[in-house]
Image 1 (cartoon, helix red, strand yellow):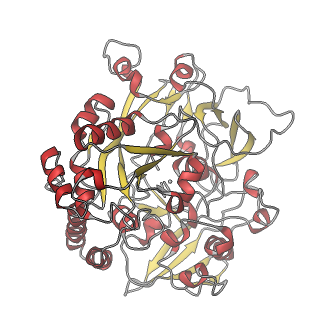
Image 2 (cartoon, one colour):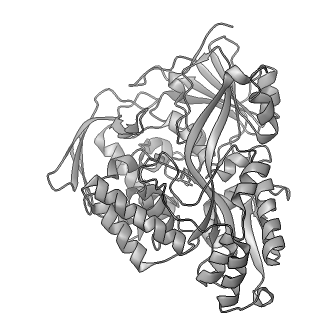
Length: 534
């Protein structure tokens, strides 16, 4: 839930389950509409978004559509740095706490209505309204003064946001934070049209956005079509339509037969696409991803309220064997939380290494003394039809073999898992997280600070909380990163989770497709893509 996990996500587990099936949520077919037949079309594989409401969207599947339809004050450029979007520029006060955004005068919703500063006030207050049910508002808007009071239902208005005039918005945050602008690139902060929202509960099935594409058609389980927005204030799309074949079959087969122009490569095809003499090698692109998969512990109940048990389960997993045998070296072993390429990545971090004897010693040193005294343990995962991922299956086998512990797997449908994990979790959960922006705060604080929405396992450490607070407010970048690294090491020492692997995206792109650039957040802005005659 790329938030992010999400969170949504925001959550890479959705991507790994793509061929197994996801919740099917959408609108009813619009009678008489069919896929466009003209040449200037980008054809992609897709699955139904869980929502197209930016305030609610918290996982990668929904984000991949939301980001094409809606926009906000700022966006991330190709270097993942915040740059102007609807805001053409901004000023930051000397104390770093007040931001004044100056909006462009040429931004319009898809229906032609002009976007003004009031629209952001409405959008943010709606996102924070408890009735909206956003699981991301506290994370991405919570630094703004007054947001906590709105989230708590104490008031309807965010005191820290002021309209200076139609094109000027002033925002005050509770303390200087180097990552605040990056947070404003997350969908929760995007602008929505009040009339559109108030038209009914299913408004987002016919969204009136501001970005490069309109939603032209959405036939549940079948087809989703984005159409070029001719009044977009930014770079106009080079294609007239993007056609997503929803649940159209096996993506690799569809790619081979020319039904889609881009596809992810799944493990069963990796030998075929990496064969230098084969037909796909020249079409292969490998993009490192700022993500990690992990096993979370429910730290609020036995047995994982005991650090010795958390460490024992951590040290009973042979990650190298999993990476090689299960994932065919398409991922990189993770000893920590921050992935390579992330500011603050620590090559010298000391992980909890694979050591069966040490794991057994830790169980003996725990309050249980022996595995026979452990309570029943269940791990929560996402999926459909009882099909468990090969990675989780291998991990459960290693615990059985190395510790003599039988772990039960409980599967939830992905929407329930991604949006209700905090309430639904068992003793453990199997999940992933993709960066929303390239800052260690987006992993360490968002996932492990006491009481945060994405701290699904209810992990708490006053000492680590204090380190994260210091790191977030430290103006010196080098000192800030050093504090984040210290906090990460403490999280690993305390076995706050079991880091498993860092992700990479293997994708195939047809030679006639130009400008399809998947970024390390796992997203591609489709207005940059062109289709050459073929």
